[in-house]
Image 1: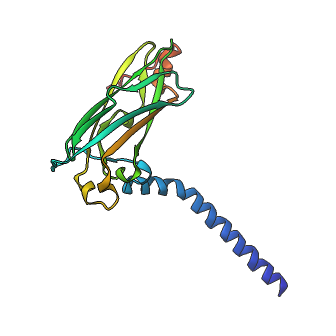
Image 2: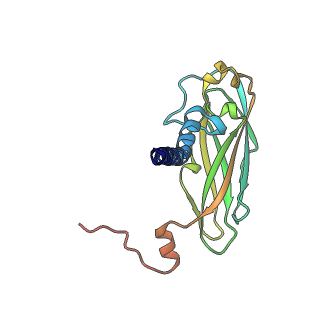
Image 3: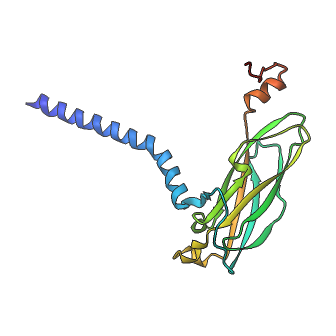
Length: 194
């Protein structure tokens, strides 16, 4: 009888450990999905085209740039702020420069503040969607196309937002395999044979 109680407790404890491990494993993708759907945490939305509705009401967009402390590029917005009508498609540029003597690949993470605006700030196209590679001494101007969803004026918290800040942080990443092969002098056959 005492052995059955010990086995039952062991089985329950093991089941609890498995369930907690599964929840911990699933929490990161679930949180990412939740942020993308709701805009929570300043995560923006994406769209294939601009808004069909453009309001007379305007909103100020500020642009911010930073980089990881190990990223050797210089990185800055080409404009500090712009005013757009809600629903109007905006186009802004950031500039990156590689002052080193080697190619460097970078990836940009982004954030929108205040957080209430994240679910209404919509990107159509952005340099942050892909990794960027700058050759030694190269300077690149990188665009971001966006609009603020007109539904922002109906949201309880977001309708009081008059300024949105779009911030990017660049991180150095490994060079793509084809670029790394070129840098080491290894020839990679990228052609296909018929």
